[in-house]
Every structure is written in C-alpha cells, then in structure tokens.
Length: 171
Image (cartoon, rainbow, N blue to C red; front, side, top):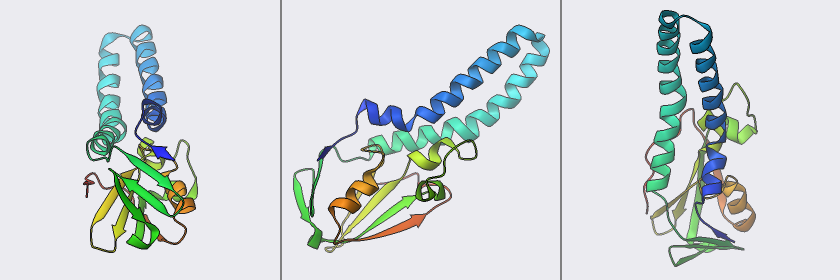
C-alpha cells in the first residue's frame, strides 16, 4: 500500500477546524449585521482571542510541522515498511510508539474535543539499530491501524498525551 500526504488527507485532518471556522465567521457576520458596532468590536475581540489561541493556532502549528517533517515515499506491505527507498522488515523494528491524545485511542470525538485531538498524532518507529522513523497522521488518518495490521510481529505501544509534541523529526 503506497501512502503519501495528499490534499484529501490534509482536508480530512482540517475538517473540524473548517467547520468551527465557518460557524465562527457566520456568527461574527450575524453579530456585525444585527448589533451596533461598539458591541460588535467587544464581542469580536473577546471571542477572536479564544478562537485564535485555543482552536486555530495549535492546529496550524501541528499541521505545518507535520508537513515539514514528513517522509515523502512510504510503502507498507505485510511485514515490510519501505521509507524513502529503504526497506525495513518486521525483524528490523524494535517497537512502534503511537503518540496520540486520549480521544484518538478511545474513538471519542465531538464538541468536547479540540480540533487537533483526534486527527493529529504520529508514530515513532524505533529500529533495532537505534534509529527512529516518525510518521504522522497526515499520511493517512488510520496510519496506526494500517501499521498494526501489516506489522503484526512488532510491539505497538500506545502513548496517550494531553497535547501532542509539536516537534517531530525525520530519522
């Protein structure tokens, strides 16, 4: 199975932020039309700080970081992982750490979860020679399940995190 970051996978990761942003913009437009300008300025400034710091900024930082620190050519087959034309078999891999939020592991999404909680996570593939390969969820939303299914002989360790690491690096 050939995997790569595509426009579709990126839009899938950004879909909750897109919905929240559309609702926010609609509400702000509605308030702009229906209220006096001084009240609108107060409401806009107070809600925009929350929107920007809690919703927009974390998603943008994670998304850009995952795009910049991602391997380009990934192929996964039964008991084999090919990353940038290097072939790794299941016997070459010591363990795979999955760094994700609690919502990703529990499949709980909705209004109680922030936009990055379920869609942004990454895998740290620890090789027996000490090197590491990092793969992000921008490759495929279910990259952890694809890896588990194809590399069944490798130990997969789930590492729940409240806020995902902002810096992943290529091996």
